Length: 356
Image 1 (tube, one colour):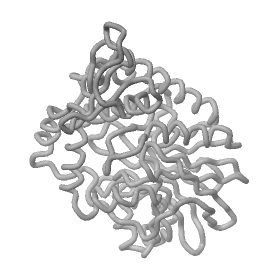
Image 2 (image 1 turned 180 degrees about the vertical axis):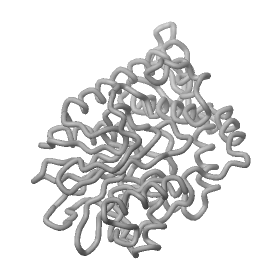
Image 3 (image 1 turned 30 degrees about the vertical axis):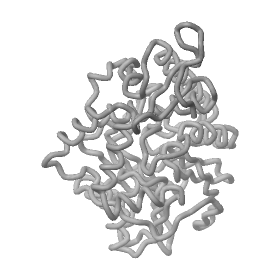
Image 4 (image 1 turned 60 degrees about the vertical axis):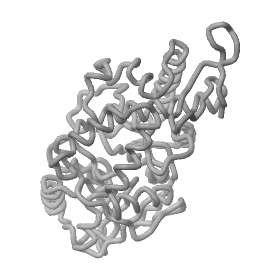
């Protein structure tokens, strides 16, 4: 994830807080992760509670979640519905454990079905497919670094649980609230937001964050244009009459349209930088990632750890693929490697190769 704005509020620790009437934010720790924490949101009801996102399946996160629920008069066995905004471990990870305690209904976006299934049933296949995608984009060294870092280290997010129901949209009714389920693909194919129109509250998941941009890129199975999807999803929520945005990472904020405009401008800028990198000679996503700077500290690619190098390559690939789809770059696949080039070579003639 690439920071594009900064805030001063410490949101990542502390006790649960009531952010709106009947809605409680619970920051759950992500040990060893640069994001520090993920926000879960609890809505209470006499016949069972709703939990929006639930943190990793990790002892430290589970202790905080159980303690926070108890503090709020709830408990894992009182949760009747876990609404995961997407399949990543910090959002879905603890769902299976909650379901074991309460028989809660666990839901996820339909677009995340295949990725979630692979992660839940064959995590080694998930890792190998990610490696294949990275190699296609010239990042074999990143795959080696990821494999080395994983030796002897248990998965941070624990197990992945499959949901009971996949959602494509519609309404979620809870107590006297009627919330719209909004498909917002981009960060993942099945990402969902929830919008309480009567209260003007958007549960944004990782779609619109106040301090950082969600990672866009490497996802298995491969295919599609995730950045195009993400930009379209931003346009789809920009005009929502939201008075309060509740993100998965960072503090609550009010200016949805303003933040969407910042994110759109950020990606316009990154698209230009990616195109210029190719015009200067970079031929694949790895080379483009090495040419760009990352994080608000403007770090070089070599200064990033292996996980963030993977994200950088994935984001570069997503931008390059969109530029090629728009006709601003040429792309071709040669020997299972994806290469990019400018529309005109150094002599002014069209670049050779089979474009797609």
